Image (tube, rainbow over all chains, first blue to last red; front, side, top):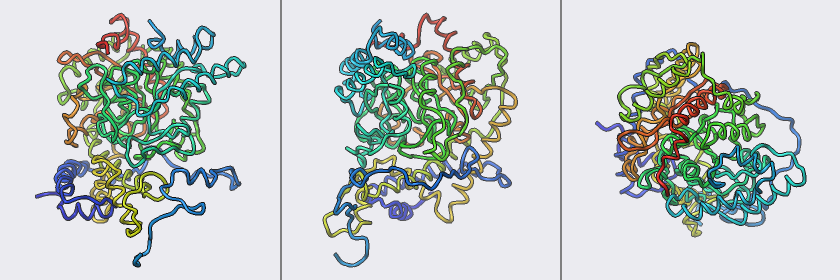
Length: 99
Length: 496
């Protein structure tokens, strides 16, 4: 039995915002199936009573004084933008209505 | 002997003494690059004029009496995952083609402040995901020992540049072995500092709880000097450790292992590795004993589960980190013809801009984090991470450092594992545990495998903030082996 179906891979691609072709879906379904089967070995470690680590070292919140400091200018911040209008990022429509 | 064969320490001293200018040193390396780059392909971006300008500026600073570090004027190859204001920064991805960051990474800034001269940006696996540099969207990089083989990865451009004498030093990042493994398979020194010991600010993120910048060099001392130059607390990185940098240069000069307790990890010292790798490793163990170290065997039974845990944790973090490539604020935008929605443009751009390995990992991470699978995959992997950290902790109660081969095999042929993800992932089997637990780990050359004549690396692992121990042991091994060989391992490499 496979660990992951082609339909599940198509769903993952949608969640990941990756517009994949049918051929790519077939290819990735086979590869992801093999990878997931292999990484499932983590279940073999008895770790019920072990706390999870999200990080290697203990983390604490880091604060700094809430002071105005120099930062990027609008020109610098927009310097790599694919499209700019009136000192802002210009983006395609984000709402569902017809263009 | 020409300038390209000098160590970074020697070049720094020669420049400081006025025996040679930074511009002359940069020129010699640029000439070497012009000669061998067509064969090696280590660099994604080179700009001779910008490099010489930097070098002349350092010469002027030195002449004006400015006090710079011991590496002032020394050239360095910089992995193209660190933001550089004056050079493109692509992470070897089409999604960032031509991008010029508006700021410098902390590592970049510290290199500049110390007067190092950046020769260019080196090739890598796209977003540092890979073990062969074949996942670069731009070009292959070839191993200087055998041009038909990979230079390791993900920092394969940086390892190849140093091993082919294009640069005495380079930077890398190590998320699962991406400094140590390329260092091992190209016969040079590579160090993954303690996580949090070197700043991630301005480093394009792959897996933030694991990513660690570190040095490549041809000698242990050079690596230590570079690590000391860019390490240390950075308020711009919230996981940066606010503690003194371990005195790694002093340790590299010390090179004394007498009385040290060294543990051989049983699970990583048996079958599973190539015979020639094991033979060189076992010789290194004997060598350390002959130098006065006390060697014992240590068992870390869960280390074999580090690889599957890593391939859940790293893709999970990457699926979140790479969500920032949304085609809106910077980078590539595809299919924006006025009819498509932002979401459609996003999906088309990401499909066109990311390569296959990046797509695989994003989807794998999305799967591991999705409800219904989270506990069995990501949650369980995080628990395994705790178990591995505890095994390290227990081991470091018994010994000062742990050792293993750096990689199970020598450099593999280009193309051999390119479309076989699981085979590729095995290259990081021995390096991954140190990323999960955050401790320091180094790879230092320990000879050539009999069956293929290719370099083998010895991995030295030390506790968190025990980086100096890696340098002490690495320098001792280097000194003893070089006196046995009558020179460095790279002297045995075929001429390019």
